[in-house]
Every structure is written in structure tokens, then in C-alpha cells.
Amino acid sequence: MSEVYFTDFSTKPSMSLLKKLSNLMNKAKFDDVIDSNNLTAIKIHFGEYGNLAYVRPNYVRVIVDKVKELGGKPFVTDSNTLYRGNRSDAVNHLNTAVLNGFAYQTIGAPIIIADGLRGSDEVKVPVNGEYVKDAKIGSAIALSDVIIAVTHFKGHEQTGFGGVIKNLGMGAASRAGKMEQHSDSKPQYSQKKCVSCRMCERNCNYGAVRVDPVVEIDYDKCVGCGQCIAMCNYGAIYPDFNSSGMGLSKKMAEYTKATLVNKRGFFISFINNVSPNCDCWPNNEPPIAPNVGIAISTDPVALDQACIDLLIEKIGYDPFRKIHPNTNWEYQLEHAEKIGLGTRKYRMHKIYLYK
Image 1 (tube, helix red, strand yellow):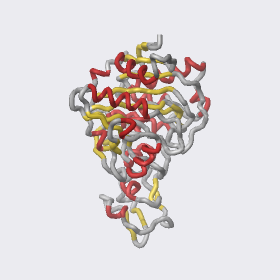
Image 2: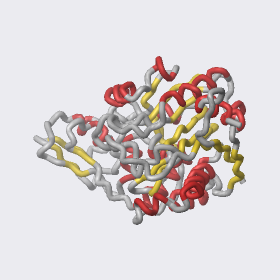
Image 3: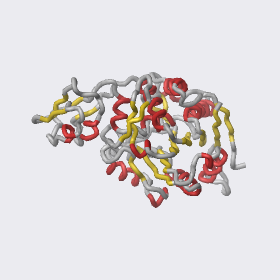
């Protein structure tokens, strides 16, 4: 049985939310996670520009300062998106992070986009899972010593909810890794959008892409790695988002397991501004539930289970099944437990630090 630590959002002048977070981390034995000189990845979702539901950078500063106090070397990170948006390459991604308040001056640590300029910097981590054999993890995350996942707990249109497993499984993957999770087929292409730059052709390791005079893909040679999607700036090569919700959820669990190989993990989830959909949208709908609190664990499965339980306890029903009736969030937790990522059984420590 895993341990989960929780506090609500109640405060008083001598106990701000930032201080409550710091105290809760102490209760959860954060000191045991960081050793001197550990390269520590603080995995956050910087938020798509226009979406305001993401975790505030003020909280991240608290975490950064605590890592430094223990002698660790923190950096704040996320990987590029598969879809074409404000975070699909490192330049736009960093600009978006700054616009949303994540800059060295505010968070006190460098920002490193985990999978590099175009989303192709990756380390292949053997999983040998039911769905994934070699997970493609963003290099900066794969090569870190410790990972701290800072998660906005929310709804998700394909997996029911987005918690730690979504944050690490999808969020730590390179663009090719995201392709593997989202699609059961190989990339599609549009000759009308092709500008004949040949970036896709030069960067295909299998000789499957040819530009003559515009793009063509030889599907007999293509292995579905997604490298050409990462290289194309014009949307001429794109994924077919055809993975089922169940398949996507189980792949995410296997990718999360790969993300945590050979490293210590510490997981913090904020159950507030519970939007119905992912923070990848450039807008956020009104919350579907009231603010609940902050929960911490060293077990990602227990934490995700505890967050949904806390939410249901607060409002009396499952808001994600109501808003997304055709999804089943249990797929990701069931599979994660099956592959040994963690347990859904936990002991809850409710700590009301304002008293």
C-alpha cells in the first residue's frame, strides 16, 4: 500500500499556499529523493498560449528552491507537441513558456525542452510491453537522475482524465513517441502542402520518404517512427490520430514506466481549475468541479487514483464520466498496476496545515 499526502487550499496570513506546498513536501519526505548534484527534471506542462488552467509558476519556484537546498541541480522541462501549435518546436515552446510566466527570473531554474529543437532528440528505452517495445523518451528527461512530475489534474477527451501517467507517459515522450501512442498507423501526407524543402527526406533513416518533386512515402519501407513529422514545418506530413482511448491509455502507462527507469520519482498533483479537457487546447472551459487541494506521492498510480477519489468525495459523482461518457479513465490505472508501475491501493494522510 502506497502513501499519499494531501492538503486542501485553505489558508491564513501565516500559512500561504506556497508555504503549504513546501510543508506538504516535507511531510512526504522529499529530502529522501534528492542527493547532491542530482540532475533533477521538474516535468511541467507550460500550457498552450491562451489556456490559463495550467499550474502556476509560483509553485514551481517552491520546488526548485527545495531541490537547490538539497544540493540538486534542477531544470524545468516539457517535450514538444505532436500537433502543430505554439509548443511544437523548442523556439515557440520556450516563447510560450515565458509568456505564461515560466522564466528564469520567476522559477529560478533553466528551462530545457526535453526532446530538443524539433522534437527529435530522444533516448530509446526498452520496455518490452504489451504495446510498446522501445519507448522514445525526450533526452533531457531520460538522462536525468530524478524526475519530479508537477501535474494539473484535469479531464481529457481521449483518456478520461490527465494525471501523472498522462504528464509523464505522453509529456516525456519525443514527438515520435507521441506518434507511437496516438496512432496505430503510419504518417499521412499532403502533396498540396509540401514545399519541397526535403527536410523529411534527409532525415528519414529508412529511405521511406522521397520528394520528387513533392513528398511521397513508401509504406513498405516506413516503420512509423514519426521522424518526418518532427522535421516538417509545413504540415505536409502528419499523424493519423486513430489510436483508441484504451490503446492510448495503455501505451501511456508503458511510456510512464520507461520514463521512470533508473531514476527516483516524486509526484505532485494540483486538483484545481479542473478543466474538462487537456491543457494543450489554446483555451480552457470553466471548471467542472470545485478546487480540492494538493496531493503528493512517490507512487504515480496511487496518486492518480487518490486524485479521482478525492474529487468524487468532494462532489459526489465522477465528473469525467459525465463530461466524457465514451472514455474510461480506469484503462490507464489498470494497465499501470498490471505492469508494476505502482498500486491503486494507498493510505491517505490528510494534513490540514493551516490549523
